[in-house]
Amino acid sequence: MTLSDKGAALESFVDYLREKGFACTPQRRAVLEEILASPNHFDAEELAARMRRRGDGVSRATVYRTVGHLCKAGVVRKIDVDQTHALYECTAGVGHHEHLICRRCGRITEFQDFALEKKITAIAEANHFRMERHTVQIFGLCGRCSEQ
Picture 1 (cartoon, rainbow, N blue to C red):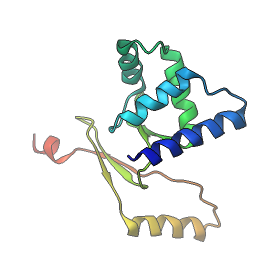
Picture 2 (cartoon, rainbow, N blue to C red):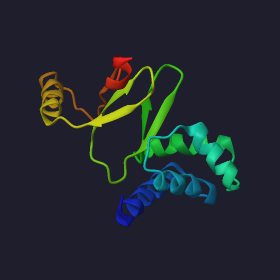
Picture 3 (cartoon, rainbow, N blue to C red):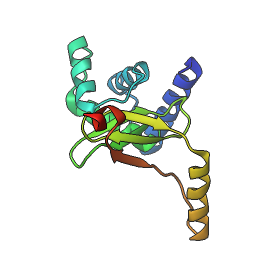
Picture 4 (cartoon, rainbow, N blue to C red):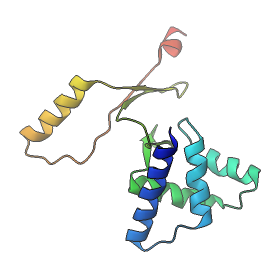
């Protein structure tokens, strides 16, 4: 992720907060900066623990609320792994992609398929549906787990 991508993410978040009447507090900014520094999918609980260990002075509740705001701002994308667990990923500087999620080990494989994207768009258009966004998550067993 480039410095420009990080700046655009911060700008989008600040614009979202301002539009909703919220302040861009140092704690919210610290959460975003921690996410931008982490290249992998992340769990909000792990993010809160990492920030607590570093002594950032950001509460667990603030981390969870900020991650929710970041999702609404389009800076972070939620990936529902199962009914009780979600992971997140930063969208800054990352092209649209889909996910293969292993039910056994939790491994997430990202993929792009332009034919699939065209098909999804065509389905929306055929149904006179104005699509704003979509996600494709395929659950099963990765190659390593299916061999076991």
